[in-house]
Image (cartoon, rainbow, N blue to C red; front, side, top):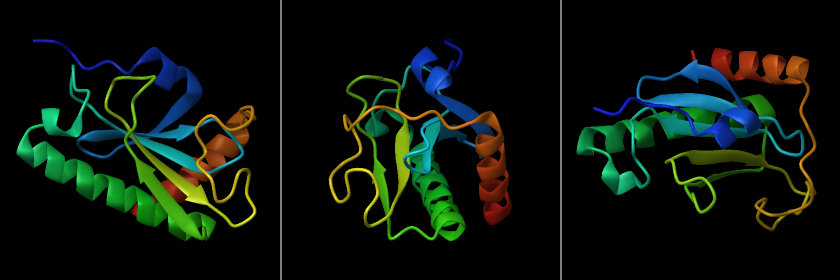
Length: 135
């Protein structure tokens, strides 16, 4: 049986902030948007329908909990949720806080501009706030 491993691109571009049960919750290292990833810890999964039915339910629950916490912490105008996976095939769900007037508002964040690194200290502070909001 294959063991779960995080895709190297997800690992490079984000930091793990919590294990939720099914998903590893990660914070993207891009300061332009408060941006989480929920990565189901199952090997070889590319699509939501590849998950067992109970895992599909857990994924929905955990993404919703992460989205609520992100909105609480940031006060965002809108939370965008998407599972695209064209570049990174490993199933992961983006949870992004959007604000009127942010970079590329109201357009999509993907492919827009150049990533602006989020500092380790800023990542840690935001991760702590999200974890507290989810408790």
